[in-house]
Image (spheres, rainbow, N blue to C red):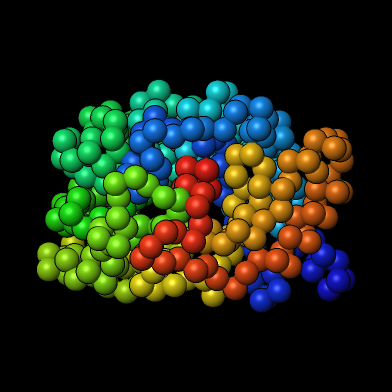
Length: 335
């Protein structure tokens, strides 16, 4: 019996149980955020992307291997044609505990109700600034008003939980840490602050100059709010505090200042079918040829996924100085 359970579930060589997969459905996005990609991006040819049917097959394989949480990402996942059909399929997978989605919010006025109906339980919305001109500068083409409409639409349809994500950059938006917490708290929303992740080279953007640590963010927040340590968790890497004034949670995601690799329970699937075992390493397996060679057989796919756990590294090697260790951009990795 013990052997059967071990075989069915995904455990890496360090004893970490992988039960959470982030699936990127596209590398395309309607924004060009300075921390994510270059302004003039070349996107993958569409034939290199996994089809919606192939994405559904891989997702089913993972849930049959004990994965209980799927997060759909991009790029911007809601620009993928027929994405709601995929979400409806994923929402019915046996054994799946939670289907969640990360979005920049621009498409939510159109899609929020459909996402909720499809079975998406929680949603993360990126919001880096509350100032329209600054928001445009950071996203290079985003419309703050449309994102705020998207947040309102998401609140109206009754997701179980909505969380805002803010990447804080020195010289861009570090003076809005408390304003963003106020915005979230007044609406009963949680918020996480994220240290910039050095993936891919971005023209005109020096990450060492813009780095703003979680410790600085926490100090800023404590000037205005009373924060209590919390054991609240969502299955991801954030360390949470409870905001006493609002009753909501504030998370800190700290890949540089407080490495969270020891408890990593995640892997990522890129939109072209590459299974990334670590955000900050290149250890991977290509699942696309496995899916396409035997599209109606799950055995080979599940075997490949199971074997990939043996190359999941202990942790990442992010660095702020010089060229990034990982040259793929975040939009290709899956946000």
